[in-house]
Length: 393
Ligand SMILES: Cc1cc2nc3c(=O)[nH]c(=O)nc-3n(C[C@H](O)[C@H](O)[C@H](O)COP(=O)(O)O)c2cc1C
Image 1 (spheres, protein in one colour):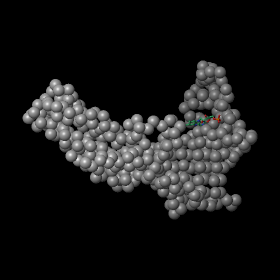
Image 2 (cartoon, protein in one colour):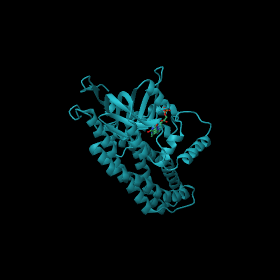
Image 3 (cartoon, helix red, strand yellow):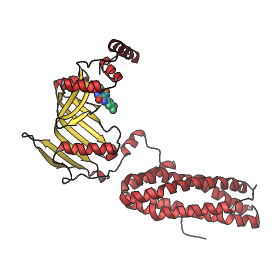
Image 4 (cartoon, protein in one colour):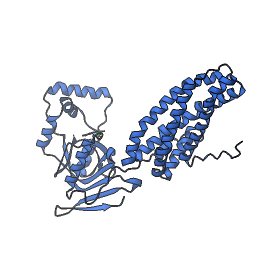
């Protein structure tokens, strides 16, 4: 008899815990592999029944939790932090690991039927070839995970990530309650590491730098690359922000189109200071732009207005942007009346046009590992030149 106590590692060592699960799987596989010969020699005796029940219990209950630990936590967490060779290793290994899980589940369904009959003292049939395939598949699967995935996790995960994995495993087993939504938000944590931003790499001219990043955002097909937040303040200095689409940028500034009588339009008329923010999450980048807003010329606004689809032009006329209205139906009625009045060629209303933010400060932010981000800020000088500085993260 083995007198050593079962020294299972705790959830504070989740990778060791997953390895311990593998050792238990190996033990159950060894039992399973002895069963066909035992059944042939002794039939479904008490020993066979007990063995069948133990194997059933493990692969019905514990193994699915173990697979879920890997699929829902370990692998996505690794994919979020792995770079270079590690990312390539994951790209090579993960599809096979997931396929193994599916295939082993399917094999287990057959074995489950047969073992249930044996455990209930009814059956004596156990397919030796399915047992063999199942054991071989599991064995090579576990070896791959232990030799390539586990060492990578130990190398890449910091203490907080280990704790996150351990917590997820305990929640899955009902040892810890699932976090409340508020706690889950606080626990959301993504490490950034795609790129860096160096003084030597950035352009001398912030417009050139913005153009380079914008083109990279387009090339990366980020979601809504031209969406930006515009922050303005009211007469008491209280800020409000909303998303608009930048339609043009050049040395003169960053232009979007809107209703001059809207909340933002009125605020900008009283205080032209504003701030823009682009967030290209897929590239782990933000650009913060501050400056003073002016209206585009009537000619520029006309040109853009008439480039818009007819329905958008009619909607711009029909909507008193930011004003209250009784219902959606009332809004539709306004649109129908405008469509009736103007037909196919609505004129640009006086109160609709472009705003251009003329920047005084532009900051480029690149997310880096462990919140040690890169920030380079350009500031406009009285002589029209730009200075450049690195800011602490
Ligand atoms: C992705 C996106 C793009 C938008 N683009 C514009 C835009 O280009 N111009 C605009 O006036 N409003 C746009 N909006 C609506 C604004 O966010 C906002 O609701 C509207 O301008 C009224 O803001 P205000 O009441 O503060 O003036 C957009 C909203 C989203 C989510």
